[in-house]
Image (tube, rainbow, N blue to C red):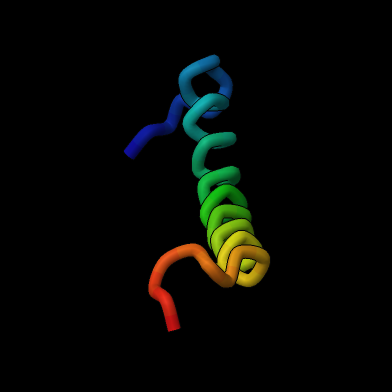
Length: 45
């Protein structure tokens, strides 16, 4: 368990831990938006 909350490494990992869910949600939204904007991309129906 990392307790270095006041060091640069602790702050970096803290920010990374907070940003990871936001990055994942943004990537999912981006993929859905790209898929809906490009109906010809991927499988042909």
